[in-house]
Every structure is written in C-alpha cells, then in structure tokens.
Image (tube, rainbow, N blue to C red; front, side, top):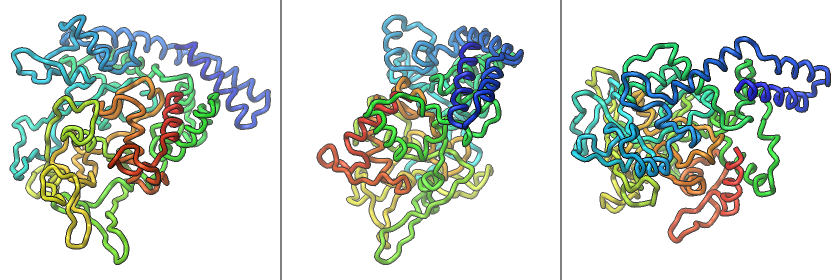
Length: 479
C-alpha cells in the first residue's frame, strides 16, 4: 500500500504539471516530495496492515462473523448474491448464516432467501418524534421502538472520501461505524479503540482504482475538490465510452459529480426532489390558470440525501407492477407518523399518505386529482400504500427526508452489482433503464427530457435513447 500511495503521488505530480502549467523544475520538486514517505505515512500503512487482520478475523466475544464475512475481499468488499449462494451450497453452517439475518429469525428451520439476494437485516431505533402506524392510523410501534429494514452490503472501497456512511448516513466516521457493525451484525461487545482505529485505517486504504486513490491523496493534503484535476480525463476511451461520458455529464453529473463521483453539484436538481407536505402527507401544489399544477418545493441546503424514487421502485416490485431483482422476497410494510417533538403529542404528518386513486381501486398506481386538478400524491409522486424503507428519515426524524438516501459514489460501480440500497436492480443496464424511464423525466433541471419513444408497449417515454444508455453503461464500467 505504501508503494501504491507513492505511485499515486507521482502520478499526481505529473498530472498537476500537465494541467496547471508547472515548470519542469517545479514538477520535479513536487515529484520528489511525493516520493518521500513520511514516518506518519509508514505508521498509517502499518496500522492498515494490522487492521486488515482484524477485518478478516472474528473478534473475541462475537457470533463468529468478521467484517470480511459480509464485506468479502474477493468480491470488491461487497456481499454478492453469487457468493451467498455458493457459500450456502458449500457450508450452511458458515457464520454468515446466523439467525439474525434469516428470513424469519424465530422459525424452527431458518431460511435465507433475503441473504441470497445480498441483503442483511438492519435494525434501527425510531427517532423520538416518530411512531409506526397502520392503515387506519393506529399507533402500532413495537415496545422496544425499533424497526428493521433489508439493505445491501456496500463496498468499503473509497471510504476515505465517501462519508457519512451507510445508505442513510447514520455513521459519521469509520471508527464508530466499525463498532456499530460489530454490535449489530456480529453481536459483539465494546471493542478496544486501537482495534477499531486499525480497522478504520484498513478501510481507508481500500480504493476502487488508482484514480480514486489520487483524489484521496490530494484531499488528504488539503486540496479543495474544485482544484483537484479530473483523473478520469486521462482514461483512454473508445468512441462508445466517449459518447457515454457525454451522457454521464448530461444525466449523472448533477448528483454524482466532482472528483469523488458522489457529490451533488447541482442544488436545483437536489431541491427539485423535496416537496412541501400537507398535514395528510400529500404534496402541496400551486395551480395557476393555463399551467399544469406545480409541486411546492422546499430547498434543502444542508442535506446531501435524495429521494430519487428507489424505495418506491421496490414498492412497485412488491406489488408486482415492475420486475425487480429483489421482488421474490418480502419487504416490510411501514407507515409512519411524524410529530413536532419527542413528546409525540402533536402530529405533523403521516407517510406515506393513504392513496386516493383515479379508479378507486386500491392497486391503481394512478392518483386521483383534487378540486384544483392537482394530483393527490405523497413524496413518491404516485399512489403508495406503504414504505419498505423510510431511509434518512429513520435517522433524522424529518418527514422531508422520507425515503431519501445517500448519494453513492459511482467509482468502481461495475464491480459492485446488484444496485441501489436494497439490491433492486441486478445489472448496470437495468439501473440505467430505470433512470431513463422513471427518474430523469421527473427532474427537469437535469435537461434530459423524456423525448425518446418507450422501449416496450405501454412504457413511459424515455430520457435516453437505447444507444445513449448503452454508451453510458460502457463509460460507467470504466469508472
């Protein structure tokens, strides 16, 4: 790893020389400085090496799981369905198959169909200002005030610059994240701080590519993102990949921008997905003569989370409306009440709101219109009976962040299938299809208008053509 870092620093020096106009002498000085490995760097490398050992071995007092049980080193530190299926066939007694991640932990003979989709159970406490409610609006919060959701296991690659961590951003640093993982998934106790620090050091040493390492190196040196040269500019791309990069700039850059490929760089696009809610949970609309109803949007300058419709897609899969990779397993069916504070005396709103459908049929996904002609919809912009995962709202208690999730880095994405927070899409092509059909058309500020014919009878107009989607996938495979 020390050698890898020195190489990255050397590459960085030459890139800076080429892109900033440094003289040969200046570049030589920078290169020499980059090649000098300080005592601090050596200590960090030693700590990371020790952390790798902790990462791979179960800690004392646990259920036999290590970090690498779920973050499989040979699979880019993710948990793939193929790995789970293979391991189940070879050794059903492996610590991965612990009852805490069984489909039903109380079953006499546990099954692991969710785990075979690459999903683990995540149990989280409800914020003090939230309750679980049923369809009639009755509070049904469990006595321990906890809920569980099914989520994918993310890769640890590029965690040196990708915090906060987890799909809902609940962990702000890698040390506390490591302890939480030991507590929740390995059923262990408090781990000594030096051990956690070594694990965190190892996680910070794992990168999806030398280009990601280059970005991390300059961030560690205090460079602002805006000043870091784009390492992807050095990629040798064929014609299709170059066209794909142009599609990326149009359709993906707004939310997956900057050198880390995980930063929202277009605030208008971000804020276009957050809406003012009425007490019943439906969106407020402005209706002007001669113009279509317009949802009232609420800027979120301090939030980096997005409700781009991922949880709603899983809902549609559960209802049998769209085919998804995870639709064969059952997800929870939640409704939540949000209050002004932890006393839970004054309700703010219920989410998702009870659907009012165009036909009156409960399974109709088309909403009815109110007296002003505005659709009666909640944050998903469609009829929705329940949520499979409230996302960031389960951490913040903020109804505006209902079903919002962290923006993941797209670096190394070709090696971390399936996709989205709950593995709803098996391939990159499927994920791009969903963006083209259902997400980009709802974000006018991106500029990828739905002008292309649907690819299947009765489907929606698409924001990207078949050729554009193919080229985009080719470029994403290079990131």
